[in-house]
Length: 181
Image (cartoon, rainbow, N blue to C red; front, side):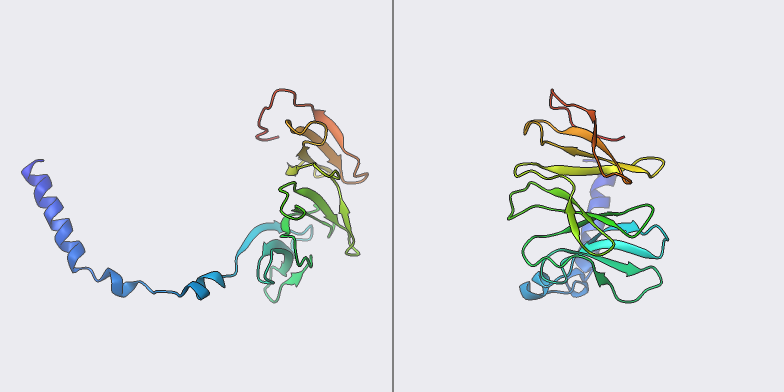
């Protein structure tokens, strides 16, 4: 170590010893930490007046919508046992996509919440796992993957929003990881 480096290190050490770091840090109890409300996910509604997100403020993750102008959030899902996560508003109306698994089986499905609040599983199957991959450029369909055909591989589908009938666009038979479309 050169003399200049030694002097710099000594000066930095001296400065750190003089800085009251502990006095600047607030401490929290484990109870306060465990009661932290988490918020994540975001999607604008078609009219850009609301934002979709998920939060555990009810004690378990559920999907909410909040006006962009501020105000209280509206709970969109009311699960008491399955953590439910926001995916996206539909680009043309107030329907939403969200995801959850049943009983912690890690087989997440894509669900549609209709305008009347009813739920529809878009990727049914007891051992099926699905993931959303985005909206098409024209916003008339979305892409998703699922292992319904073969548990080892995730095929890619396109689902038109007018029919909600999935069409296979890529059959994975080698175990590739899908990245983007």
